[in-house]
Length: 103
Image (tube, rainbow, N blue to C red; front, side):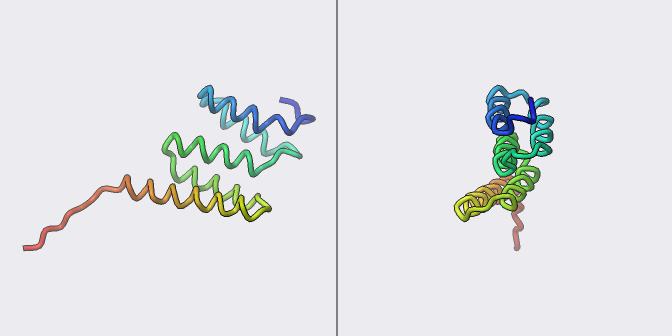
């Protein structure tokens, strides 16, 4: 990828995610975040979505938090809060239920 075309990185990363090219996704995302002009919010959101689908919830939450910090509009901020609530519900659903019987 060329740094002179920063708008292509989110689309390329989305294509890698659809094609499930797991090794290339993280490297491309790291490179994209170093290029001036690349929308960091989009990159972090795509990584969050990818990691959430892979059930890496703590890493997905970290990426959604970074996206929330990078966004400048209120609608995006609310969107990432919803993503974080969804992850919290999924992690709660994965917890073991312990029943304590009292006699």
